[in-house]
Image (cartoon, rainbow, N blue to C red; front, side, top):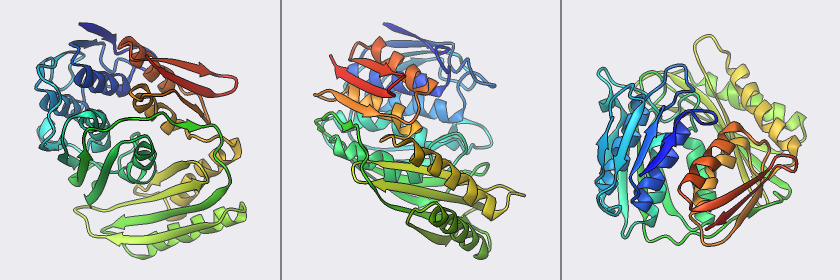
Length: 346
């Protein structure tokens, strides 16, 4: 049994998700205590409980403590990860439903299924574009393409947009198993080729995405960057808005976004996303802050060393490195001065 202190570092859900992924892959029984102790509302929220149940389903784990608000979880896999068709709905984790982020559930089970024998199809239902979590657009345009480079064969289809607080979005994830993961080296990003993106609304007037797109293109053009932003108006169960940008460099990708809310002008949403992109662009780094910790797990499971330069050494990054080392799968070195991450699989 491995014991993981969920209050370590940033004390959030990443400790839980990485622990679940590695427990499913290795088959090692794992206890996580002080779950999300560093958060305003500690313990398992709906999306975390769904991630627990999803991880348990794919490896037939025996679980104790799988309840909303629980701060102690015992997870005992009983079989190797099984590739097949699954459906996981975040709204089922809480009475009255939930818009909890399904991208966090996806990141918990993706690598275990990629390493399993055979292919899987997973239907995920809940929030697709939610504050404080990677939007599905980022998963589709940045995270999965870079994991594809490392050998993970997967694709997603956004079937329905799910904004906070209604949720009810839907995503289809296809994962081809038997993946052999290779290391990744992102020491230089190369020249910027293009910034592309989408200004998206559901159940709102068409002038709103047009205003977001126009403002974003103007701001990026003023900064000397070539950008193509597509205004999109979709049907949905509730109003929602967001701007999603991808910076495509010669050797790397980076993603940035901002979500709309009542009272926030469309132009301000565009400005928020563009400011994040421009801030990253000025660093010269190859990997954005969020991708920095998301690459650690596939790098730890690869057959060769990985090395990459990050825009910022976040607490998330250092926390995720610590969790991975508890399973003795890799050595992670983080140079905070040079902002370099090196992952050496054991």
